[in-house]
Image (cartoon, rainbow, N blue to C red; front, side):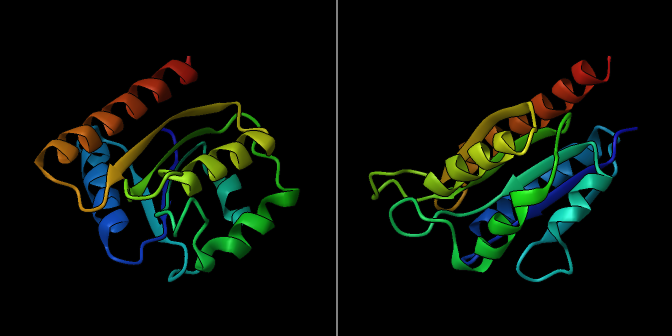
Length: 153
């Protein structure tokens, strides 16, 4: 069984809610998921090396900016090699800004720069997840499990 880490940053609770929906869906598939809140739990970039699969969630601050509380995490990714890691990104965004979910896109590029060749599509939810978004989160998790099976072959 692949070791999966789900880490996220949340200010208003929206991204945390998305993370919980995804975690619940993954555990239904029988995956063991370790969940961490980056700005609250004792988690470092080097901890990512212990996992084959990474789910990363963040909200976007202002017009596409990375949240202040995870800037150090972003910077610490400089020297890490994530070759072969399966990565998917998610988060809450605000459609009132022109750079919708920019922090998610920025982290996706960062994961690719660090060698994660299997960076999957990104799930962006406008503010608080509604009923339709919950279904999208569940499908996102289902698709992630499918990709894990493909990359395991």
